[in-house]
Image (cartoon, rainbow, N blue to C red):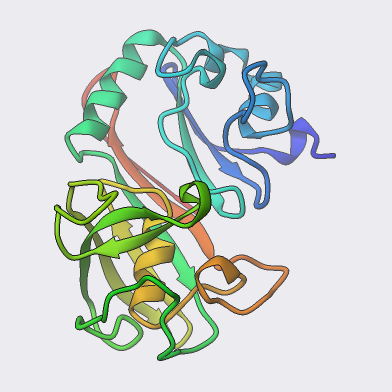
Length: 231
């Protein structure tokens, strides 16, 4: 079982803390009691102030954003109610910028079921932006699919963009401000590059999951200065 010493603190101020989430644990509790192993329960052991703010769910405390369970990397918490309210407002207005390293093993022309044809650029060789609406897909909406129209069935009705920059022959740096569940995973699979280990979206099986949150930019709630945290 993970111990509190295994959670790295990457940035700290009087109002916020940024930690490095290990892969394959949930960001927040999945049940109502909040006692199961997850990032929130591990961080509150050494920084109980993350539970001071009251937000969308009491069991999440000052959690500002989530990462998918297999994804590792930077997660932001507020330590006061004032900081929480400020950061949630920043997030709502697309002022919290997140960067991810997306790693893949190669290209495939076989799109997973339910994907519309992809007619965009090649993110492994060009810089550009992948844009779509999203809709829930499959039993209990466990997956998502890109939608070309806001009127598609079970569609979010909001347009989401993933900015892609080539890093290496097998990795892309993806930047987002407004995020949807599985956004980068789905967009990369749509473009023909499912992430390493992401079998849900057509990736190859692997002990390693090819998505890491490596950058986070926001305004300090206390003084309005820009803060950029990187791994």
